[in-house]
Length: 275
Image (tube, rainbow, N blue to C red):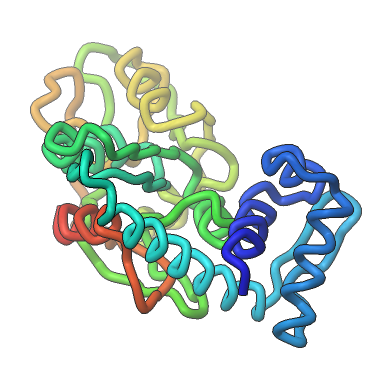
């Protein structure tokens, strides 16, 4: 298959619509549609289904996406061998995960690699946990890190660490409202924590947008929160409310299985082997 067609296919999945992908590629929508139709004809299968506001990738499309990324990265690596003026590692990698580990764990873990390889472009994407699977499937990230093991076909999953969750409140303030902060209505960390303790969660909830908003809200005495312990270790603004059982969640690194991984991907996976 033509590598230009494969690249166009990956951009379509990443963009989510024919309109956005054609603009990114500098093609007409008709030309892009012809490229996708050509791939479907070659494979005798449907790769994407059109919706009023975008596309859905089919199981066959996911298979092709994995193959296309592998082929394109091999091509880039092969051609790079013949650039006699540039022997430095270079390339791009996109990592998506949730806010409580991105700034505090993932970026520090990769800082040495990034300093030693200034031509490598690492893009960090912060998203809610419920969004991460779709980000991987839609080719908006090369790897994701979740706090559970997803059921994604053709996906390699590895536990690389754990987060311990605790209840925190302000040391300074008194008469703290009996309200617990989460990112948003979809965030189940607080409810899951209380369920693990054998308690029914029936408190008021407040939503602070992200983990740093939650920390600020608790420090101001606006409420309490179930928080990753590593986020507030040695922070004298908070005290931990003890419970019977310690509660942990696995950190699971996920990416699509491939026959070939770029040197950048291999190095980053090695750096994130354990955190």
